[in-house]
Length: 274
Image (cartoon, rainbow, N blue to C red; front, side):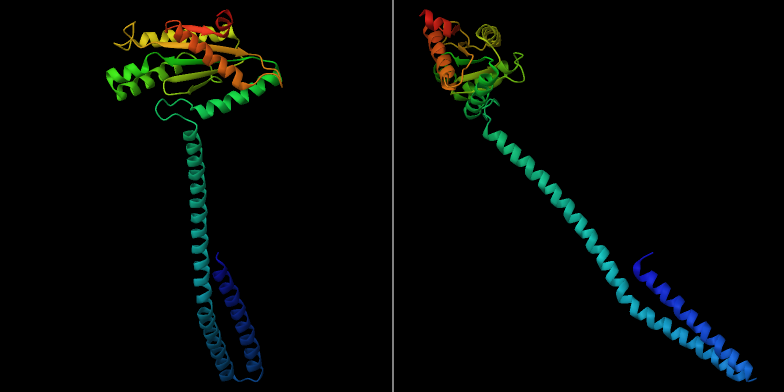
């Protein structure tokens, strides 16, 4: 029962009770004086007083009822506003996450961008130094990519980049491995916990996956799109090794692979032999 109706009921019962008590008293007095007319007049008077009191209370309580309705409407509107605020907050958080992801993602290939790779390399390098584990970096370059763009057009070159990125992503890399578009036609792969021999297996699997795409490339000696790969691995020691060192060594190994005729893999061990 609402507040106004509860108050109205109580006041009405109180007024009715008072009216009946007054009627009883006046009636007793009238019968004691043996005056029946007085009793009848008293009863009528009391009933009229009760009716007038009820009408007065009703007029007084009507604004209270309207106020209560207004309060209920305000509470309902407040609940709706709170719900809309919560929905807006969730939407804003999702937008912030999307913007953060876009800021660390290459728009063309969907791989991580160089900024994210460098951040990931630093984090994994420090973790490896704390836990005495190794990590490896695979640097990949699409052979004769400028010549491909010149022969087939830049849109075709963008398509090749997307296909190469997807093929590398589909080579059963682990969830913790980080794939990144490092340069225009370079893709870097960060392998936490991997040594050189393990990274070499992954690199050969990647090279084979691009070979199986069988994308025609008239300017290539093989007649198809190929990749060259350089690999470096390190078990970092604090205040001795730097993340830039393993990255630079992977690039040097890549340069050796390109100088060795492309479509091949070279490692830091090959650099020492050379």
